Length: 264
Image 1 (cartoon, one colour):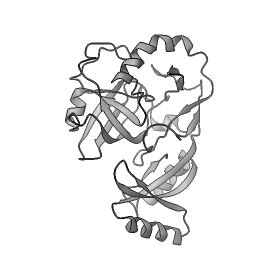
Image 2 (spheres, one colour):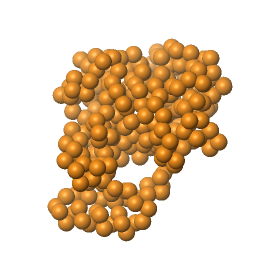
Image 3 (cartoon, one colour):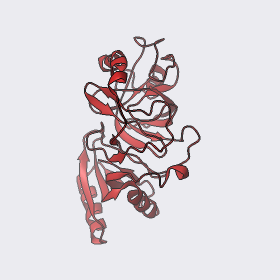
């Protein structure tokens, strides 16, 4: 939690450093029904062009922590990622969060680097399958590979109080400020490297067989080992825009019902 404390101490300094909002914001996202995820942290995340014409939400301005600038998303619609969750408790209870609220460790809120404030997200513990619905009202965690900081109550509900951290999947379940996915489509094209994940296996040979079967049908595919969840994953792609990956995901769901988009 030292990282989270450093953030709150640095916020006042960061506000003076931020300047004009040009350039790119980092991240990986997804479509409704087909989610977008990273492998933990934000290294290698796709880049989207910052568009000042987009309706801004509170907390959407770029900010700098420890020399790194973060570009929050204009909308959380369709966002999903995988990584490590942590939690913060009594040391921050009663103190202000990044959106100005008072942190309540017994409430159901969370900190995220990029999602707009008030975004509702589903967080699933990949170790035990437990899930919660929580709301983003703070920034962080600023620790490598950690993607979300949960309240005490959220962490307890996911069964991760004892371990302190857990591998999770985060999925946005709605928009903020009444912005729908349809209203956002066409505003900008999210470019990067995306895959559609169609399978995950404990046995490497099963992953190899599925990959070869997909390639025999003329599609580009790969398999790789994810030590975070101890599985071999099979993915189709790559696609150079999020929209193309989402379209491919939609077309594959009949054959692979659990498919979703990932941004490695």
